[in-house]
Image 1: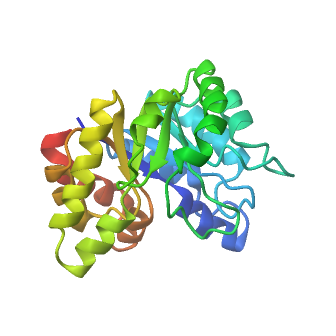
Image 2: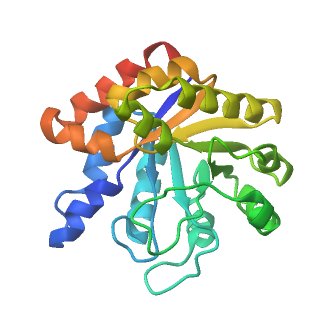
Length: 251
């Protein structure tokens, strides 16, 4: 079964561009859930460019009210600063269903690579244990070509999230077979290690169906940028329902 978690960061980008509370992140998230989305994802960053700590608290309450999963993404190594307490303190306060750890730096426009376990594995181990003590399922952002995917299980993670940007690029260029084989192999290696598999980044209505048909047992897709962009034309309710229809048999 594949769940759809809607990332609402881009709603917050629009709001923050003018100040105030329009568009309303909480209302947008509620609309997604009422349309059938299985959960909400946020990726608060230290520079507060979109989702802020107060949004995380409000969305945590909303997802509990709707009895759906809340997924908080972030770099566990990023130090706290004014307005941003750090990923682990946010998780300690809100106890999300899932914490997705991502190795993004402050200057990155968006997440564009997974963890290097040879470098970061032992640093991640105690942080994963701490997050699990809060009741969080822990997922690690990884590249499909990473030869050490099984290390994620060895250091305590429950899942990986495959960084699907390269697949989306291949889809846009035309031939996808090589990319799909790479991602399918990564998923099989993760399953063999006892890991669940999530996927996210640059997935869209156009490319999602083929990905799910070829990559086995994807438990969750986290989609934000394309979904919010498509919703500008078709509306948020209709767009979420369209994604659910694409996922279709995998739900």
